[in-house]
Length: 377
Figure 1: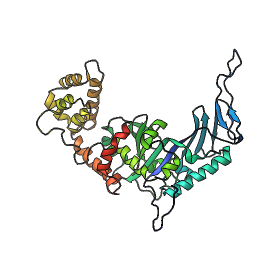
Figure 2: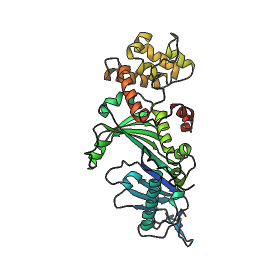
Figure 3: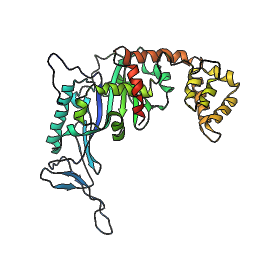
Figure 4: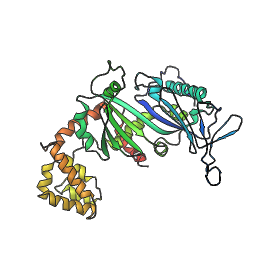
């Protein structure tokens, strides 16, 4: 179905920025161009024969262009094309491609189609691409939403750092916080500081302008999350990207209902550690130590040595996890000596949840709850 404006209906822009994307074009067709130089195949020094015989692309006349690698990079470094035995990969920030002032732009489906048509025109003029990129599939997809928080980003670190798969990285403009793994992740950083570092005009942006990015890092994960869909398929179902973003953050960041986030998993006085041990769930550690409070740990076990012994029962005596967990406990206890981590985290969680999802009415909790399982593929 082609995109069209229905009578009486004005297409609404996506409530997200589509930032970095990688597109894979199989069996590309190109007119040979000096902008797309081909590196020759490697040659066996003893026999003089080519080690590889990779067809990088085919000309419109059917001639096969053979080599080991070909690449193109635009003058502004926004657009890169790489061709090897896995096919043609087109790398760009769609937002920077359309708006060189800053990569924050919300597109309607019609505008998205026009954006990809513009990209098609540039690739055809620069590298002679004849393949239709609307038939390409995603090998990376970054979706982002910004919110103005009440406090600077550093004040929210307690909220991020207690999540599974958390890490942070010091960058020139600020710290960036990551929650995720090698296939998909959330990146959280101060977008205004980032743009200032790039020399962009931010006079109309508020302080504490925090970006949450959900990144699908590879072809397999894109296929698992969005399906075996082409660029054209996505454009024609443009607002499905909001659901993907919401569920991505749900998977890593908002796993629990915000109103039940600190509620014990059992109703009686049974120790939560034992309960989780019996159900085989090792995620008990986050709830028990980081949210229940440090004094409760010592009250229940009497000492850190006894607590470590209990950890060994859960993870096994040969595991390194007990010592790692104890070290993390000590680090957090020293960082928040008030022993009141729960009271620090709870209002931060509620603010982020409200501003990212609930305030705009763009999150259906029950619907997301039913569909979270696909992210585990």
